[in-house]
Length: 191
Image 1 (cartoon, rainbow, N blue to C red):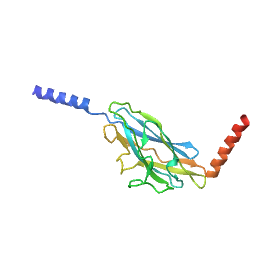
Image 2: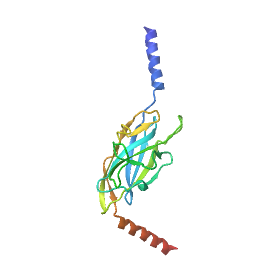
Image 3: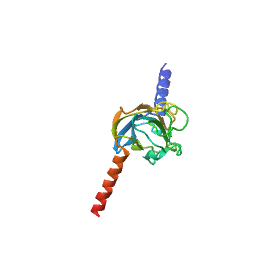
């Protein structure tokens, strides 16, 4: 009987040691100013994320195309550079302009490579509006490409916390033009 208990205890310890710890991923989204939506993440200790497939719903605003992908971190790349934005939960590229879209990103990391536990600027997306207004933005998982919206190094799907819907101010194009011209005039005056 003692041998069985020792064997079960040893098997339990071995399973604990060899089972990867699954990180919890917290997706963050902020208003970066001038109609820019910045999306990032924070991960708890454990298997780190290597892929993202998220939806963005911003009724009242739109993206005009892939040129509205302002920046993304160097650790991750947009999977399909010609069509970084897709129709959420459907195959094929999105029809522009679009207020509801998804994007897929991933990193090609070798096993044992250190993946960042936190990236504040995973992707920045420029939103447009024909009238200046506060837009309600909702971020969610693209379930066609990934059940939870995030894929871990070991291919597992973690617990993911999405941000609460929030407001982002999207100025009209003329307002952006005036702000840009004002900045040029101030700079010219100083020199």
